Length: 223
Image (cartoon, rainbow, N blue to C red):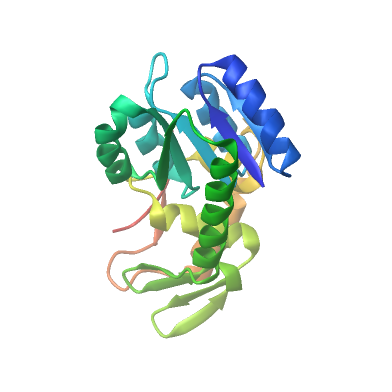
């Protein structure tokens, strides 16, 4: 497993990271949500441990940002007197929470349980949007009655477009999350993949092209 730890207590992060490593869990450490956001664009994590009290932007405020681009399991780290607020955290998209101080062994157990459940959910996933049904693990999409095979990149691009809570997905997020690199001025590979995906999906029965580019912003799936 690879876990992102977000907490402003550096000694706590260092000690927890060493403990997790002994249990075959790799961890990446940061004490700022801005840095965490950059890391999430570049790296696929199996879980996030997110402290509620952070400088600049607290964990509750950062959760919606995570959920815009990722369904990675999130465990909130909270003090005992914040337990009531965790109802709000769960509503915002957290999967679990644990109160400080906690048993590191209990945390490992929770991480492994979340990881198992998340992997089972991914195997069963089917994402729908109007007449589109996407089966990411089979690299298939059903458009109306037609079944179309996708490449891994096309499937990941469509998954992000279908599940986006915004009106579009930015180009830099698509590069980071799918192509695993930063966007550069003369790199047109994303446009090529999108063009191929658009052709495979075909036009919407009444709305024209299903995927549209928004100049200066990114791509959107028509709704």
